Amino acid sequence: MIRAIIFDFDGTLTELTLNFLDMKAQVFDIARKYAKEEVIAEVEALYVLETVYELEKHIGDNKEIFVEEALEKVKVLELEASEGKGVFPYTRALLRDVRDKGIKIGVITRSCTDVLKSVFPDIENYVDGIVTREHTRQVKPDPEQVKIILRRLNVPAHEALFVGDHPTDVIAGKAAGTYTAGVLSGRTTKDAFEKVSPDYIFNDIRNVRELR
Image (cartoon, rainbow, N blue to C red):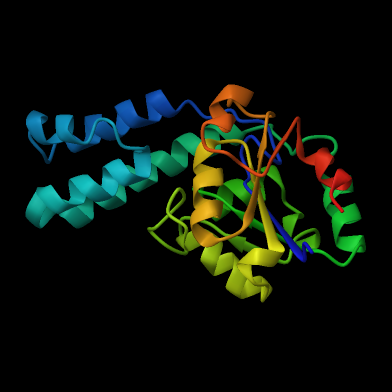
């Protein structure tokens, strides 16, 4: 029995508009003020936030300045990408329907709270808990964000479903012990989801209505 549904944000409840390649390039531009090129090359394959935290280990006395500057740049780019954007037209109705069935709703995101409030200003009227990168450095695909939201919802992992538009969502949910669903409303293909074996693959979040 599903007692809680946890949703990713960008690409799941709202359109994905972030340019991650540009974001990483701008973080690297900042890093070049503090780290050697060979150090930067070693973290090139990591996601943006993991890049920042890994570079922090190699920067020395300026590490706090670098992290603050890099995360501020990430936040600025996130807010720029969210300008004029709202949630999908069906998001509010779906969340309301789910809650009306007595199912708790959580949202977790690698983004920051200001972005959520910019895109979905009334989000707290529709969800029971939110976890962003401000709550932990261990963001998905690490399972820590999922574990935090489960504690806030007071629901065990085996009674929760994590829904997201990226394989990292599936990986995080599986590691935390939840059921998982990949949605095709972001940039991930069905084939890419099948490689990480979610319990469900949906066109978008409206398909959760089919669950029993």
